[in-house]
Length: 359
Image (cartoon, rainbow, N blue to C red; front, side):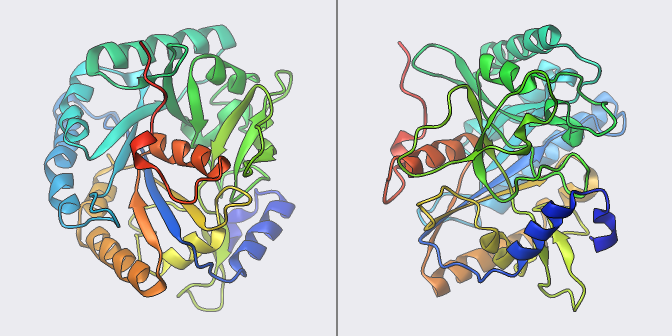
């Protein structure tokens, strides 16, 4: 992606992205990889048969790819489908569920909305999460009995952050998300879109200002041994930096996007590590959250094809060469691992990646 496309971004953000791109590649002990898919089988006004076909390609093709790879504990790659609840139809999610039941990923919440209110947003989230739980068995309950879900905002406009004021309308969206059970937001990075936050390459907590948009522009970084601010929402960002990796002398943006023009080339791995997204005080753990739109046919070809297979092979050889362990995780698992890092875990406990059982 060319540098001129970043003209809408805040200048200080560009400087931080440039500095991130100049860092030395760290040598972590643990790397956690999550692919957050803005999964929209209805893309381009697809009819019913086309949507079924797009979902079936994943149900049939992803296990073939995943079973050829395994992380440091032998687990196959995971894929988190953030499903657009504004177009929810149970038959499509039913079609996707064999992948989830067979252990290849999870389903979370994606939402495109415009000119909304806090009341209508709250009602839609609560209704949709309950439907997805009752019909498909999705989501876990916390110790208070609340269903917990991960979230990605459509059109990048989280908390009414689009500069034109469109594609949301709710200045207190972070509060509504917290009140309805959202455990973390995975929207960022948005660059080169102008909704990009000034905070980059961080796991942090955003406190809502209900009178103003884009409260997640800044926040308090997640830190070992520290209690998050009250009434704050966990934000898990993907990498954002200006990269020179295998692109000649001109820098380009690295935003963790997986599309045919930004394939999962092994050379990108150093940039994702260089971004250093993680918990302050636990730099040995690096969280790599990538994003894609996996239902678009061209993206599907890439994500289920040879380039993705080569990436998994390169990740394995890189981990062996540099001496770190790597783990494929879902969005929910990544959030729980963040909390383990905050609690000073030296090694991840994969048997505790859920909220306490609710009776």
